[in-house]
Each structure stands twice: as C-alpha cells, then as structure tokens.
Length: 129
Ligand SMILES: [Cu+2]
Image (cartoon, rainbow, N blue to C red):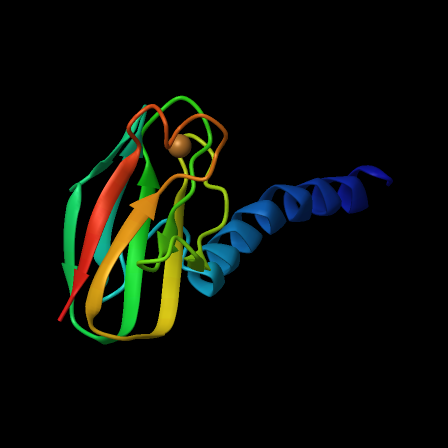
C-alpha cells in the first residue's frame, strides 16, 4: 500500500529538476550568446581579441568571453589613465556582458586589471566615434 505514494513521489522528483532547469534557462537567458548590438571581445593570456576596438559614442555594450585559463577583466581608461569603467572579473570559460552607459567620442586604452596581465601585453585600444 505504501508503494503507490512512493512511486508518485519519486516521479515528481525526477520531473521537477527538468522543469526547473527549463524555466531557469528561459528566465536567465543562460549563455545564449551576445546581446544585439554588442561588441564581442575574447580574452586570453595575455591579449584582447580584437586588440583595436571601434564603437559608436553613447551606450557601448561588450560581450566578453574568457577563452583563456585564468580570470581576466576589462578596464577602460581615459587619456590620463583613469579608469572610466570596469567589467566584472570573468572566470575561464565564462562570458560577461559589460555595459558602459554613456561613453563620449575619443580614444581609450583597454587593459586587463589582473596583476601582471597589463604588463604581459593584455592591452588594447578603444576608438569611440
Ligand atoms: Cu587578464
């Protein structure tokens, strides 16, 4: 007599994670790729690809992919070397959307802020027009 409720319960436990995974996949968007209009930048040891990035002035959205073996980030510096915007630290194999809300036209340096990476050549140029 106890078999029926047990069977029903175990079936629920099997179905629930599947439904949850589907709902979360839809809700979060998962790693569904770069947002529309974003600029894809790959980060490795020790380079940004592309190294020379062009963007229109205003809201700039980067889609960062860490294709390397260690964490990387992306920091945009103004001509005086001051950090204007900084992405989160992206773990190896992860992706991150990095948005700068209002970036004026100009030429900016892009660096990875992880210790030693900038010195190792992990730099780029962002030209905003
Ligand atoms: Cu780095």
